[in-house]
Length: 425
Image 1 (cartoon, one colour):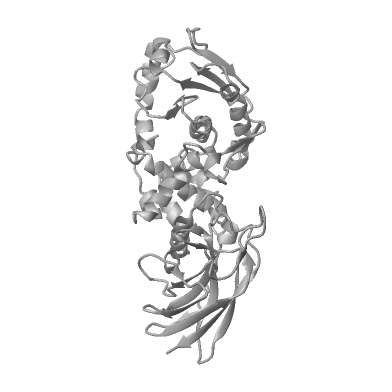
Image 2 (spheres, helix red, strand yellow):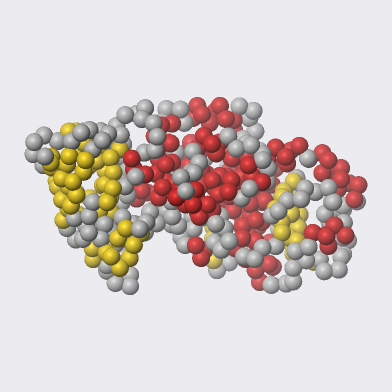
């Protein structure tokens, strides 16, 4: 929902509803029924089904989790209640007087005051997602500190609407483990495609989104990614979770800049690495890496141990421009435990590929030690090493190493490999 557009239309929208005679207790209309729960009265023209009829319970469970996330006293607001409209046919709701003709022609969902509207979807998951997305907007506006600028408003709504519903239990702010967990959601694919096509968005670009950006679905993917990154990365989570308290402040952008000013360069490089490796089940803990500048090699070689269950690891070795280095790897480790242990060596497993390279193959990268370095991080441009490779270095920097695997599949890896790094003539 475009944030500025929403606020610009508030008065006209409310007046339009009054003119239509919308009442607290709507008239019975053919084909429209109600689902009533503690925090939601949902009007819908969809037939009864387990998935649709559970939406009230979903919303009620979300209320407690919204309160916990935003630090709101649930008992103090126990009577908070929304009216929702789940529509297959908007025309039917307009005829019944449940939707004002002046309500914006939104493609998916809209929230205003104590009411929200959303269209039916071909995915049961995405139908719930839209309810939770609009519910997050409504909750933030009513009980938290406000919506904030478009990137934050939509990023928070996407973050907290991305969920798991399993055995009647709801989990908000759930990082999907597999594509099948979130049919028709597509946020991770938006970011992956953008990176592959060399049009990934910087955080500065996302933070500058205006109200028009969310007329296109792509912006939702990038706003979700920004919020998920800031909320999931241990370096930034505590600061990010303060931002909702500033959402109603006119200098929100300036205060965000100040909050991250000291490590803005690091933040942006972490973001680049996140975007380059984003996948289902992304493991923030195992993908954490140290910004530790290495020391030049002397005439002798150095041996480095690389863990198979982590992302980029600093070698402690600084590679110098204009020189060549020989990397020789050895060892056995595993890249899966089920249905059996998959043993692997630095050359990788050629019966399965990831990012067009054998799973488990040794990768290297050279990260600039210059804090003012421009352009993309060397950690977004991996170099295939395998069992051995001679590296010719154009730009100086610290050598980083890892095996080739999804950032969502590191937890079932085990073991280490050894890499000998030596000067080469």
